[in-house]
Image (cartoon, rainbow, N blue to C red; front, side):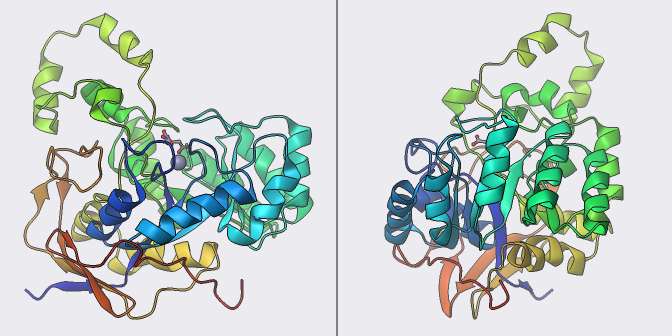
Length: 384
Ligand code: NCD
Ligand code: ZN
């Protein structure tokens, strides 16, 4: 069978940890992981150390990307909850504004309605406002977007019922889009029992009935984004090597220790899962199973990610995939510095063999072929 040729994909939600967390990932390892997963462009979140909340910190982070990135990129600016003007001044350098209305890893949560209203009113674009906002706070974000006429993007929708108010707002003329993560589509809260801290993520994984509803309502979803958020094995604690679905079925037959669940819930490990290298093979398997069409997959991983952020596809770029036969995702052997995957043991299809970016081969058989700094900021499209 000839290899499958795809356009270079774009992941609109990643955390590459530089500056401040390079023991987890850095721009070199993270953009290499992007290429090996078939992504030629990534959008990086602002919850770094220090957080990216003004022109100076954003400019410094852009400098790191300019020196080290091997994929294309766009960077978000955040809001420190206080200095609206500092955020606004960084807008021309940013791909969008990221606001955290709920608690997560990092220190950028803003709940105070007056502050939120101020920043929604002041944001000048051209990028949209992207929010981490689950259920109740998502409704607040929708209201603010409507009141101030802002383009809103809801990151990692946390519950399939949240898709309805998004759709209703869209019907009322609010410009709102949303993304769902692969871990909300391919893992359920069963994984928390099986993998412990390695399935601890914000928003939390949901029961399998809700995973089914995400799939049934996929027509209401604009994009799939990994929320690639690596933490080291040391930070996450010991991962059971036998963490495949087969091992779980075995474990379910064994008597349960009722204290286990409670201990895991209280897990002090930081939330977040790597995902750049597993999205495409998981989705190709889903396409193979007839759960969605290849065309729809490309809307979710290419067309809409670019449209939402008003970005141009990089010219002369392509991903070549050797489909082969279905396989189980491995325990190790990833390019991401954290080196593990919560999807270990899941069925997948296809290996990225070659990636072309702006006319040059940039990746082949596990190797990056270009020098650090080949990556460029994703260009804005005309209409944005
Ligand atoms: C993210 C991280 O580790 O940066 N963690 C997560 O559980 N998703 C934070 C985030 O996505 O907001
Ligand atoms: Zn995130």
